[in-house]
Image (cartoon, rainbow, N blue to C red; front, side, top):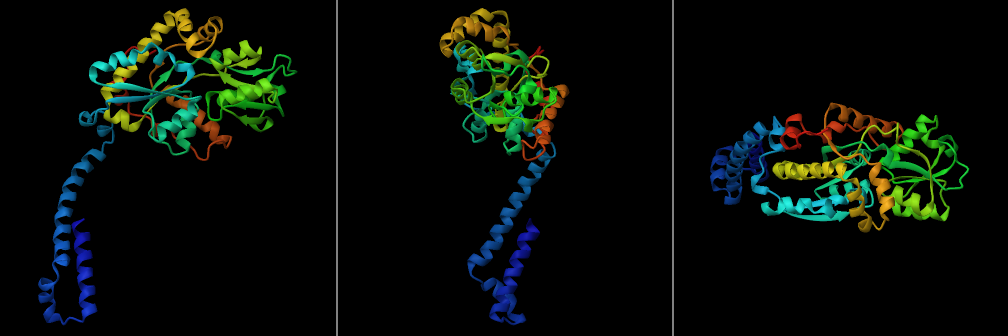
Length: 374
C-alpha cells in the first residue's frame, strides 16, 4: 500500500515537472516549494497507508479463519429487536408468545411479519426486512441461486403427509400420470414445487409434461374453486382447509416421497452478531415443538380461531404433522444438495448451487444448537 501511494506521488510529481519543463537542478527545489496540498497529500497518504497496513494485518489474521468472526465476537452490536417472519403453518410460535417471555428479560422485543409462503419470506430476509424465519426445503435453493446471502441454522422434522396434490372431487384424474397436459398450480420455489417434481419423476413423467401455474396459496385456491385448474399442490393448513371447504380429493400426498423437512434460516449478519440470542430462540422453538408433540389437541384448539379454521379440520392438519427440530449435519446437507441439483437439472434455477456456501461450521452449529435434537 505504501509503495503504491509513493509510486503514484512520484508519477504525479514527474508529470508536473515535465509539464513545467523544470530543469533537473531545480527539481529538488520544486518539491519543497510545491503547494502544500501536493506535499500534504503525500504525507497524509503515507500516514493513512501505515494505518491501513496495521489494520489489514489484523484483518488478515481473522480472514484466514472466516469462522473466527462468524459467531461470537458481537457483544457491542447485540440486537434489541428480533424481526421474525412466519407463515400460517408456523403461526403457533407467535400465538403462544414464548419468545417474548424468554427474550424480554434480556431487553429484546420480537416483531412479527406474516408471509404466504417461503419464497416471499426469504425475499424479505434478503432485503433486510426480517432476521429469521422457517421455510420448506426449496425456497433456500431458489434464494441462493438468485444471490441471496442466507444461513441455515436448524432443520425441521420431515412431515410428508402434510403436503398433497389435490384435484376437484369429480375430476377424471385418478393417478399422477393423468396430470399429463394438465394445469397444475403451486407456489414456485416452495416445498409444493418439489413434491410435484418428485411425484412426476416417480410416475415416469417429465416436468414439461404438465402446464405449471405459479400461484401463491390464496390465488391458487381461488383459481381451484373457480375450476380454472386441474390440480393444486399445497401444504397444511391450506391443504386441510381446502379439503373441508372444497371437498377436494387427494391424488397423492408426500408419504414415501418427501425425505426431509424445512429449515429455519437467518441472515448471516444476525447469526454473526447474536449467537447467544440465536441459542435462546432455538431453545424456545425446540421446547414448543416438544410440547406440541404431546399436546396435539390443544395445538388444534389454539390455532383454529387464529386461522379461521374449525377445530376438527385443524385437528386433521395437526395430527398428520411431525414436530421437532433436527441438526444440520452431513446427511441433511447431502439431501439439500440433492434438491439443488434437481432444480438445476430441470433448468428451474439459473446456476448450480452449493448449499454448503450457506452453511456454518460444525463448531458454530454446536455453539447455539439446542441439545437433544432428534
